[in-house]
Amino acid sequence: MPYDFGSATLGIKNPFKPEGRFRVITGAILIGAGIFPLMNVASALQQGSVLGYIYAVLGFILIADGSRHLGHGLLQLFRYFVGRSVPSSLAYNHAPSERDVAAQEKEKNALLYDQQDLFSMLMGRKNVTFAEPVGWMARLLHSISPNLTFLPYPIRHLAQEMGSLVINFVAGLVLFAVVWFVVSTGLAGKVAQQITLPVMALVLLIFFIITWRNTANRIHNEGNQSLHSTGGLSFGILLALSILVPMVTGFLFDRIFGTELETVVAIKENLLTFSVWSNLALLLGACVLVVVGITPNLYTRLKKVTPKTEVSEYRDNLQESIHPNEVFINVENIILTNRRYKEIPNRIYQNYDPKLKIEAADKGGFFGELIIETQPALAADSDQCYKNSFRYFTTLLAQLCVLTGFAFFAMFLLKLGAAIEYFQTQNNLNQMSQFAAGISIVNAAKFYFFGWLTFYLAGRILNRASHLFWGEMQFSSLLMFMKTEGTFTESKVSTGMSIHDSTRSENTVVRSSITPWIILSRISSSIFATSGRANLESPRFIMSMSRDDVELDKIVAELKAFLKGRESIASITSEADLRNASTIHQVNQQTRALENDSSSASEKLTTRDEERAAGYLRNNPDKSEENAERKNEQ
Image 1: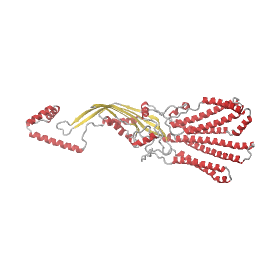
Image 2: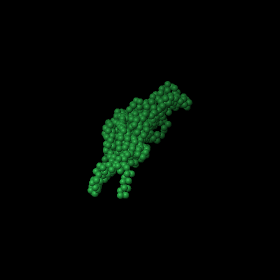
Image 3: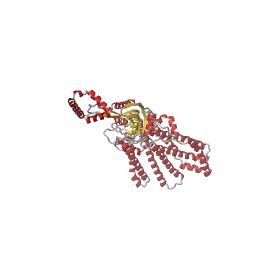
Image 4: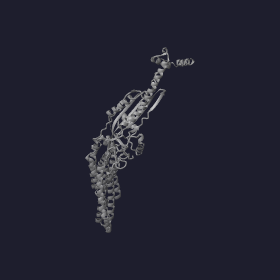
């Protein structure tokens, strides 16, 4: 959405400054760490060492990634540009002044609801945001913690991913224990006893790394218009595979190697001797760090849920002399416009579009509906609602994991370079001792490689989780549905019909039987902000609906005051017109006085007689024509 500047700001401050400071420090440390290996490149290359190239690659990667962290951190410290069109609307906004913004919201898929959803929520006293979980794993987690249902989708997804991560980790270890039992009892054969466990441990480690990567990719604030399915792995299938795979591999190894256990032992010692168990221990420690860093924030957020679905309602039948269109115009253009927040146009999710049905020349029916939301204002407790020291702890832990991951990455490159140099400098690798020494260096490189992936992914998960907790903002607004229907009849009212009146007013009065139905709720909605241009353009989630009887009473009182204050008879309000009418009245009085003086005393009529005669002639136009003809004949 464009930056719609206005002097009356919405009071939304940058929520990411603390997180940005941590990232700036991390970026500066990485850039500083990348300078040291670059300083050793020239000397290493002059000596013809492979480490010169390793230093160059390491320094470039550290500086490049440090610059990326520093750039993200600085962006989060920059001014937070918030116009008068944020946050996103709940549904498509039909307000004439917001057509461009509404089109962009629809194009970016930032609308979570439609007008039928909002109508259903107000009329049915329900919240369609709180959908049931999808998938076996999600249902398990929501059964353990029922309040997860009342969280916004991004945090629900985060909780589900964390629960799935822990459960899959435990399930993997249980299944590996099954494999160990199958192998240790000899069911997989003698050869499998030597090689199956190391192979399965490596497979388990790779499986955990892939699981962590998928978890990190699924934690985000984009495309959260629906709940994600969290089904988890089929434990029964994995249990069967953990029994069948060792037995099948053992059978194949027995057929291939037979009784040549020396070859199998050599393969195991030379290729599978790197510490898989150490990497699994690192992975377990990182998993504990991730859980410890995220769980307190989730627990704090769960305590803040208020899943209310309450509304204030008004229904009545009014008999008023007013045209039906006037009711719609007054409600939309006066009553609700007076409730704008900082004079920002209201969000119109369903236009009134009043429909008048003429049944006869002087009667008919009418019907109109309106769904409108006032401009969302930052909730009074938004700054305090979710601010807690745990968010600082999560962000700090994320940066420590990132730095630890790069430390493992540096050691991996250095060990890899050392292994390459070792094999280049050794002239006789046929000796088992020299070959084993080289393999030990390679295995150390493998350990650091998987350690780097472990802490890199842990830091990525924690960074994305902390960004969600820092970015949640809560808004308060008034959501109202109004339906007005009824019937109307037309009649004429005339004043100033006396023979002596010089002015006359004839009016067509519309008498309406109005049945208004107003449903109003004070809603609390959450949106997850981001840094950059599209900072508040993600979907907005309705979290609670509360009664607001005070505001409803004010609206009803203003509506009734408008109906009672209507004028059915046209009158003269201009002082100039009043003077002109007075002059005409005086002329008429003088004219009648001259006529009375010129007539004989016997022909004089009193004012009462003249008015009666005028009324008789008005009601009997035929007699009036006969009298006129007699005068003409005389």
